[in-house]
Image 1 (cartoon, one colour):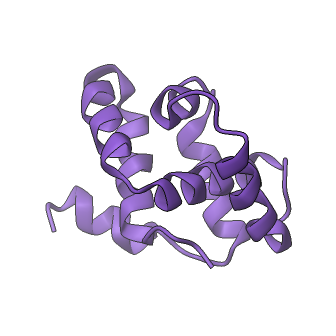
Image 2 (cartoon, rainbow, N blue to C red):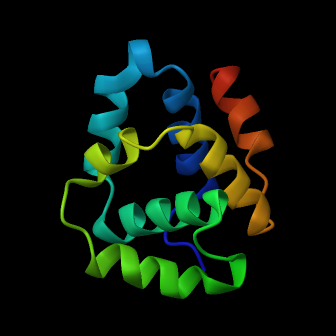
Length: 108
C-alpha cells in the first residue's frame, strides 16, 4: 500500500513536466512530504522504471527508506524522465492518476 495519495503523486508528475519553471515549487513540495510519503514516491518511480515490480512495493519502500543518502528532492529531480516513471509506476500498481491530473490542470 502506498503511503502517499494519488493526488500528491499527480502534483509531482505535473510539476516534473514543467521543471524549467516549477523546480523550486517541486522541491518545496517534496520537502514538505513525510518520510513515508517520500519513500513511496521513490518506490513508485523505481517501479515505473523497472527497478522493482509492482509486487515488490513494500521492498521498494523499505529500500528507499534505508538507502536514502541524499535529499529526496535532489534524488528525484536528478532522475531523467521522472514524470514518465511516476506515471508508469502508478499504472503498474493499478492506480490511475489521470483524474487527479485533470482536476489539477483545471484548478480543482
